[in-house]
Length: 297
Image 1 (spheres, rainbow, N blue to C red):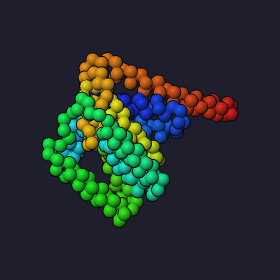
Image 2 (cartoon, rainbow, N blue to C red; image 1 turned 45 degrees about the vertical axis):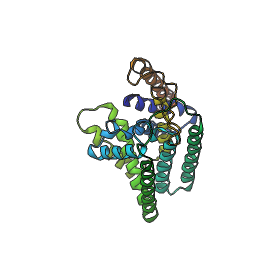
Image 3 (cartoon, rainbow, N blue to C red; image 1 turned 135 degrees about the vertical axis):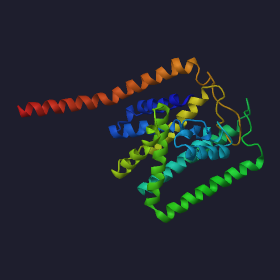
Image 4 (cartoon, rainbow, N blue to C red; image 1 turned 120 degrees about the horizontal axis):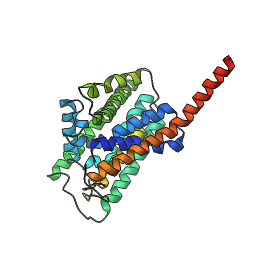
C-alpha cells in the first residue's frame, strides 16, 4: 500500500476499534495519531519511503541501517518477529519513562507472543517462497550482533540514567511516529518535517498522558503488515526462519482498487468512528451550556 493509505488505515482502524473501550478524548486523539504514524513505520526499511525522508540524511541513514539489518524491504520489519521487536522497544521506553514495571512486563509478553507466532509461521511448509533475507549467511549473524549491541547500549543507558533516559527514548519515539504520520500529507515546505519536534516537546513538557502510546504503535505496525499482505507480494510473517510470503495478495500497490475502494472506505470508517466518539461529548457539552444559561437566567 501507499504511505497515505497506510497512515489513514492506522487512524481509521484505531478510532473504530476504540469505540467499545470508552477511552477519554485525549487518549483517542493520541492513539489515532500514533497508530497512523506506526502504520507507516515498517517502511523504514526502504530509503525512499515517506518515513525515511522525514529528516533528510539522518533518517535516510537510519533507514539504510534498518534495511541492512532486516534483510531488505518487506523482510524483517514486516514479520511477526519485527512486531515483537517494536513492542519490546516502545514498551521498554515507556516503562523507563513512567517507571512502571507493569508496562515493561506487558511489552515482554507481547514480544513473546509475536516470537511464537513467528516460529509458527516459520515452521509451516514453504509455499510461494520469497527472496532470501540475506545474500550471505554471515550477514544474518552481523544483523543479530548489531541488534544485540544496540539493545545493550539502550539498556545500559536506561540503567545508568533512569527516567531521564526514558524521557529521551520516548521523545525519540514520539518524534519519529509524528513525523511518519505527518509526512504522507505532503505539506509544502519543511513544516511537515519540523512540526514533530515542538509537538513532542509540548507533550513531554506538559506531561500529557501517553499510556495508550505503546499499544497504538504496536497496533499500527500490525495494521501495516495486514495492509501489505492484501497487496501483491505479501509479507514474510515467519522471517527469518522462512521467507514464505503470506497474504491473499488481492491487488497491486497504488492501483485502482486501493485508490477507488480501499482509500474511500477508510475515509468513511474514520469519519463515522470520529462521529461516534464526538457525538456524546458534544451532546454533553451542549447540555452543560444549556444548564448554565438556564441557571444564569
